[in-house]
Length: 166
Image (cartoon, rainbow, N blue to C red; front, side):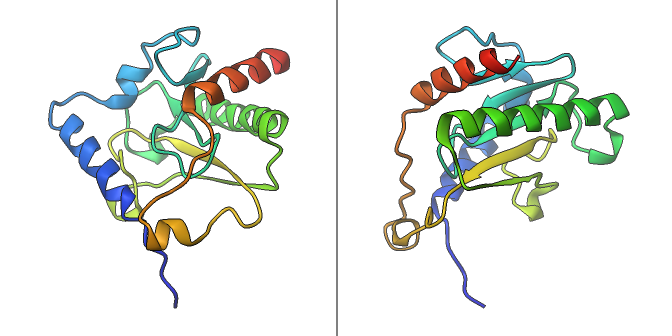
């Protein structure tokens, strides 16, 4: 079995550990922000969930859909929360297609630290746009992941796409 190493993730996980030591949930803090504020990465707010750009993305446009309710237990999500999560993931997919025209997507959740969750105390769902050949030698040899677009530029474009779709 071949292994692909992503050492930059350890910086992310360490930064989350430092933040979580202060007993503040990063997602609960983000949920209080406003979409039209250009100082944050919030893309959309629903009744039960919000959508935010990942600060440490795997690819351009890496979004997360997060329920407002603070829980780490996936099985405790209500029917209403599950429905809105799926609707928001579909909206994210449509928006990402408009802005980036990816060839595919990874959609999922990492439940628990051992599954790779950087923030395991608040369940959240990832949608990552994918292109043929979007992985290369840089992360493996150079310990670098290339993200070709500024996060705030990405936010602006995705917010415009969301406005057209809503």
